[in-house]
Image (cartoon, rainbow over all chains, first blue to last red; front, side, top):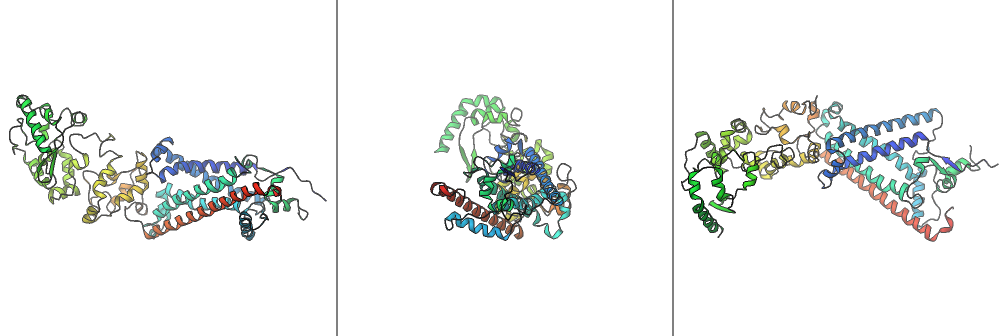
Amino acid sequence: MNKHIPAEIERFDLSARIQHVIMFTTFLLLSFTGWGLKYAYADPSSAWITIWGGAKTAGIIHRTAGIIMLLDFLYHQFYLLNLWRKKDLRLTVVPMPKDVVDFFQNVAYYVGLSKKKANFGKFSYMQKFDYWAVYWGMFIIGTSGLFLAFPVMASYVFPTWSISWAWDVLFIMHSDEALLAIVFILFFHFYNEHLRSDVFPMNYMWLTGKMPIEELKHKHPAEYEYLYGDKGKK
Amino acid sequence: MKIWLNTLLLLVFTVVSAPAANAASDNASCLTCHGAMQGTVEKEKGVLVNLHIDQAKFEKSVHGGFVACVDCHLTFGPNPHQAPSANVAKAVKDMANAISAKSKVDAVAQAACLNCHPDMYKEYASSIHGRNVIKKRSGDGPVCTSCHGSAHYIQPKTNRESMVNHFSVVSTCGNCHEEKSISEKYGFSPLVMERYLESFHGRKVKLGHPGAPVCSNCHGAHDVKGQKDAASPVAGANKKKTCGTAACHPGATDKFIAAITHKPLHPIAHYSEIALILLTLGVFIFIVVHVFLDIYADVRDRLFRKGNKHE
């Protein structure tokens, strides 16, 4: 018996969409202001920071945006907890051995070794990478940023034997991993969600949260199978 | 050739303006010639004297308008034909003798600052710079003009053109403190400048932050002390107080003040940096390759595999 198949499916609820908007707004503010400080001795940086209201104001913007981002991240954990409480939480974004298989299948398809596309679930390994990159960023950049923003308080946390390098390590962590985050977003996320020929100029899901069922079937066949397939349990 | 020309020029101007110079000792008389003269003469072997005074610039300096040439160039009388006399106050003469290893052009003029700025001089004389110059008669340490520039053109500290302005003093200190020969001779970290410039303090100053500290904010200026001197604001327990001022880092702890030392990067920090750069590079290469493979496959599918879009 065929179940009713809707025309489109919601993949991100309103809360997730708002979390995403806060995340990328603060991310852009942090990148723009932090870039000037990281490359302070490069020529355009002084002029660039002037646009952001001078070094002092740019610093305040950076700290404020950083705290909002951390709160957004914290909120996301409660959001997940709430989904779990309502038994709505599916662990679809958790990396699985299948992702390794998907990766090799996908690369084989890319280079022409296989004509079969990878059988992606709700989230492809690229999307999982995108998601968990935020956790890595929050852990490395978020904590180091918090320590650097409140260095006197942070000094109570560090053991005495670490202080001859801890401050430099914090600075390096913050600055290098921020560069990694920017490069990642600029090349990977922007390509996949903005520049790719099938989504250009952008994947509107960040606004609507919904994906047409045809696209789901095409891009996430395993998820389509899970939801509407003959063996589907829903 | 140049000296010959200059001599001729000097002669011409002297003849033309001698009556006026005889009558008055004001700056105009000196500047009649020195405003127009160009180039340098060799006073003694290797000592070149710049004869030119930019009158407009001098007038706009802090000394312009009320300091007469002969207030500092004390050995020169009102009559330029008279030989320089040694009729100079003892304090200035002692100072001039002390800095003669450094100041070969007109030591008296460079020592004469102390006539009008005795407080600054006292602070300077007790500093590590002053002691090195005055007591040890070293040619290394700075005299007033080393940091403030020629007395003819000194600008107020608030002026960006001043060599000791908040945004230029770091490079002024760097003139000597970046020198490897100086850091080796006096035993401070050769990376003082480099480590300061890459610190948050240095970066913020570069970007125009008015509150970020420059060298003198922590180390003092005229009264700067060596790192081993207990009176130095960054020595021992003083450092906590210096870092912990209300405007900077109130409540600074011992562990907090270890953040800024100007010392070379600790090996742990150094290798952490390399590890993180490798990680960044690795991820970057991975995603770029991945993106280009995706573009390749996308173009290929659109051109040659139109049929199987919905496989």
